[in-house]
Amino acid sequence: MNTIQANTFNEMQKLLTKKVTKLFLLAAVLIPMLTKLLLNNLFLTDWMDLPTENINFTLLDLFVTILLPLFIFIAATDLFTGEGERGTLFQVRPISRMELFLSKVIAISVFILFILLLEWLAVIISSSVFDKNFDMAAIPSSLGAFIVSWFPIIVLTAFAVMLALFVHSSVLAISGMIVLYVIMMFIPYVLPNSLYLLPSAYLDWYMQWLSDVSFRWMIQTVTYLCSSFALFFSIGYYMFNRKEA
Picture 1 (spheres, helix red, strand yellow):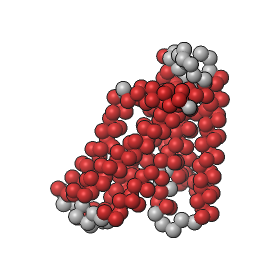
Picture 2 (tube, helix red, strand yellow):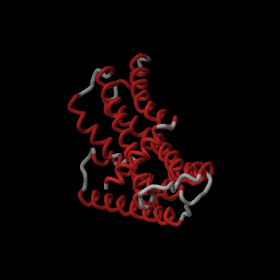
Picture 3 (tube, rainbow, N blue to C red):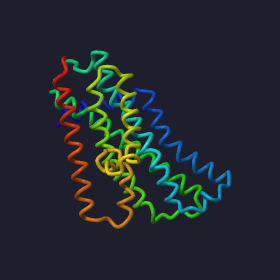
Picture 4 (tube, rainbow, N blue to C red):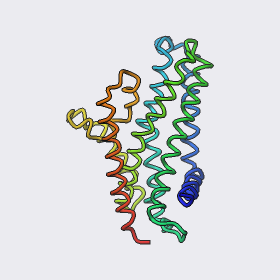
């Protein structure tokens, strides 16, 4: 476990040195702040009359459906496909391949959670400053929505890692992920019955938790997400383990 923790920290450091990671962290703070500032100063009454939660959840939707998937694709490509291209994927170190693979997946997942929490903090601070109807009682439900959103994002992370290990070109990997993700987002409009078979369908599942949650629905959804993660993780590790040093 200490080996995994140490290498996870090492993988997180590698991600943090990337300019694109710093850009996403900055976006997590600036986008909520600027959104609330613009809405307040431009006197957009149609927006400002909405409950604060509506605007905050719109910001959450922006991150979980667009910005975080993009960060996942970039991070997975860099830590797997990119390092494979550079010949640094399997450096000499006292760590097994499973530990190395797991630490990379954990590093991306931890960064996602950190970005979500950073965004939530920016949303709460900007709401308390700019929203006249801001209700402190809404803070727990808001935090819960952001944290719950992390779980389907982890499934998408395992999916992206699996795809990153199927190709040997970083450009092909990230472009392929984006194209496939866009296709997954639009498939339900053509084939409605396929909606809940796609990992992308659960990115906004926090909305279900804000209403009356069916115990049966909760068990089915959690089972699907866990099963999907296990499948993508297993295939990803199989491909990772087959790679030559």
